[in-house]
Image (cartoon, rainbow, N blue to C red; front, side):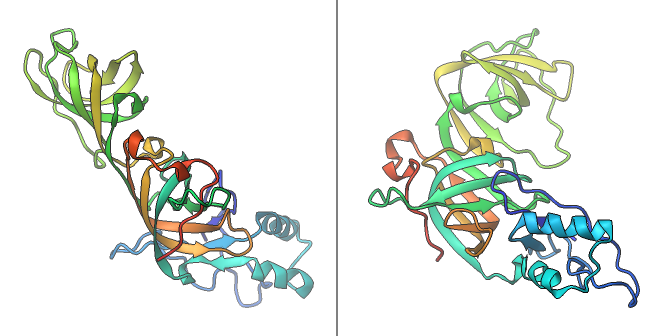
Length: 294
């Protein structure tokens, strides 16, 4: 059984439930009546499982259960425990459009706060989008940004020429930040030829990228970027998201007990579009009003 805690900073998969016993076994309110569905089905449907409105209540009950102090006979305990469960898949899906307020984590353990681009509502709480803990939320960041957005671990693709020592022969003015498919292997880099280079950023300091390429003899490159170099983004990384970016999402909204901000959105699809700084709305700052579901 997959379970989610109600903490914005950490979304994780809780421990699996004990294997179901025979009919004579004591009642366990946390046991699933049917076999848990996979995180994503063949048709692309994402399954969330159970959300516990109060993680403290869940942990307290499981501690009692493991100690043998509670075996499902006291309704004063079992009723609140059963009511603490929320089956996320029963919530209707809705679409959301707004402006990013903050983001943290990564695809499997991450969250993203967003609100409406409305400068007149500077104190309303944002919605908090929670990504699926199995990493199956479909997430893309697109758009353009200054090269300063680069960070260690990002994968970049560019047309460039390097010498035999793996150093670029001319400053690079444009490149892409991408998320390669699973099992992707880049082409080897050959010196003294203009080729497409795909590699992972090791360091980025003062306009110089140290890049790792997982193929061929030239495995480490040193590339100089032009001062006005621009990155085109088509990747699935939360660290590429910043306040003021536009967001479109589809997910299941929960506004009851345990919800974060104006509501927790268990998102199946998220598209974030980078906006130039000059186009960012003042409501992107903390305090802007949360967007509504459509």
